[in-house]
Structures are given as C-alpha cells and as structure tokens.
Length: 471
Image (cartoon, rainbow, N blue to C red):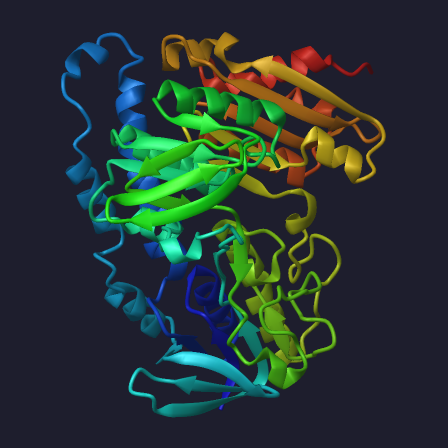
C-alpha cells in the first residue's frame, strides 16, 4: 500500500509525486510509455529544438556584420540530430533514474482505476498488479491530439503533433489542418526546412489571443513561403500511393506528402477505469482549485486532463499545489485553500503565461481585451506600442517588427493582461507575469526602471502611453 498513487509519469505526474514525497508520503508513479511524458519526448522540448535553429538563422540575417558571415542554408539533418539529443533518442533511462533518486516507486504498465483508491496495473507481459492508496489517487494522464470528423481523415492516417515533432525525415510537402499553437509552430518549423507548407484554418490564426498576434504570424508564415488559407473548411482527405490529397470547402485541391492535424486536444480518460468510480470515460475531469475532483475526498486530476490550462508549465504549477495539499491532508495539517494560498492553483483562472514559438514569437499572460470584457471587467483600457520603436529593439535587429499590448483594469489601476509579439519577446514575459499575478499598481510600476538599451524599455513606453497617475 502507498499513501498516493499517481497515474501518468509525465512532467505533471512527476511533480505531484515529488512534492508528496517531500511532504513525507510514499508514492507509486504508474506509466506505460516513457517517463517524462509528452513534453519531454513529443511536445515542448523537441518542438522548440526544431524551431530554434531556423529562428537563430533568421535572426542573424537581420544583423549586419553577422549576416554577411552566413553563407549556407539550414542543415536540416543537423537540426533533427539536435532534436534527438533533447529526447535522448526517446530513451527514458535518465528520467527513471531521477524518479528513483527522488524516493518515488516507478511502476511500469497501464494503470486503471478498479475501485476506490485502487489501481490495477497491466504490464507489457499482461501480468497485473493491484495497488492500493491509503490517502489519494492523482490522475495526470494528459491529453491526445483531437482528430475531427472530416471525411477520409482517419483513414488517411494523418500526422499528429507527435509525428511532427519526432519525424526522422522532413516531407517535401505538408498540409496542416488547424490554426492554433501547434499548427503555427509546426508550420514555422517545416517552412524553415524548405518543406512546401499549406496551413488550412477554419478561422484566423491564434484566435484566442489578441487579434494582431494572429495577423502578424500569418504575414510571417507567408513571408517564409507557406500558403496560409484562412476561414477555410477542410472538406475531404484521401491518401494514395503518392501521399495525401486534401480538398477544401471551396473546391480547391492540395497535394502533399503528409497531412498534420492540429485542431485541439482530447483527454486521456477513455480507458483508465473512470466508470468504476461513477465518472464518465473520455471526459475532462473537473476539479476545484486544490485539484480535487468534486464528490471525492481522495481523487485528484492534474494537468491537461482537467482542462484548466493545457500547458506544461501550468500543469507543473498545479502539480506542486496538488502534491503539497495531498500531503497536508494526509498528515492532518492545515490546508490553505484561499486564493493565492499554498495549496491552490489560482493562477489558472486569469494569470496564465504562454509563449507561441513562431517567428515572431507571441508571449502573453493574463486576459486579452476581449476576454477581460467577457469576464465582466467593465472599465478597461487598452494600451498599444510598437516594440520596434524601442531603442533596445533597434539594437537587437535591423528592421525589428513587434507590438505590445497592455490591458488595464481602470477601477483598480492594475494590469489584467499583456501581449508581446516579436522576435525573442518570450524573454519579456516573466516581468509581465509578475505584474499581473502581483496586481502591481500602475503607479508603482513607474518605479520599476528598465535598463537602457534593452527591449524591456517597452514597459516605460507602455506606461508613458498610458499616462502617469496623478498624486
């Protein structure tokens, strides 16, 4: 018997287990694939490795003196080899060693709930082991790519994000269905590999972000040579001996070597035994802010599976809270469940940071102007500024193009959200996150002096455009 059983040994599950062990609990961590999960092997790390080389090459080409030294094209095989180094060639030995060193018991196999606080693990040899938890079970099984109901799509055996990030060779042509983060990042990466890329989106790109973000990324993808079809339906997909044929709603036909589906995610809850405890398989798992599933005093859901914020860093944030609160409850210690307390994931609601590693990058935290209005903030002010007009940006690259937006709650004089679009703006995001999470008054931000000449001077320009508070 263990104090806690964690289903899923991705980054989120690892962190739940680690925090619980640090809190004095015994933990079994169950995994049927690679320890380290999606982020380590098929998402965050390999995707950024694929994107980085092209971004660096384009950055150098915008700095005279350095640009003249660049005479060759991107070495795609070298990029793929570097990607492989990040995934350790899809070997999880080092991750498994860390789990053991942290005092966590790793149980290899497919885990399913088979009763209250009970998990049955089926190993690769079909043998079964029944694990019992004294205090809690945490589900951290993550999510899979969603395959929409498009005629012929499933039969065409499309790529998902896993295939795109683990490809051993780059295709001559790639059709991407979708307009979100995965779609735009992979379009950026593969266009940089000289793959002929066609991106088909039912609406605009990055529709959940500030409108200018999608507009700037659309332009950049087209400048890279990608074909971007907006407000376009994908009607039919067929695979033949030469590749795939994709038909759009207007009757256009696109041929390519592969088709990548990037239309969202679906929870990995279909076959984990939810029905044995009265829950519905295949559904997202609702939780309170301590990550506890309503109606249970022992079942937690952490990371993508709860649909609060489908981002690795936010899942790890939830995991730290969940591991700590599970340990506190098990030990009979006080639980701090108030907003911004020790045992809650308050930031999930209106303070989530995110970077889309397109070129230009999109870095945002908190609420967009539209989201703020929908959330009931009736007195907001939007402040925009061109990042290229900042001295630090002009030093960074010739012809720097970027934009910043600050959304202010005028009633409280605090920032609700910030969005940056431009090369390397991800490095500006943490300061914005501090301002949003800390609800730092605008008047106090005037005293946070940005160093000159850096791109952080964008903060001064946003504040100057907003206007200094009186008094």
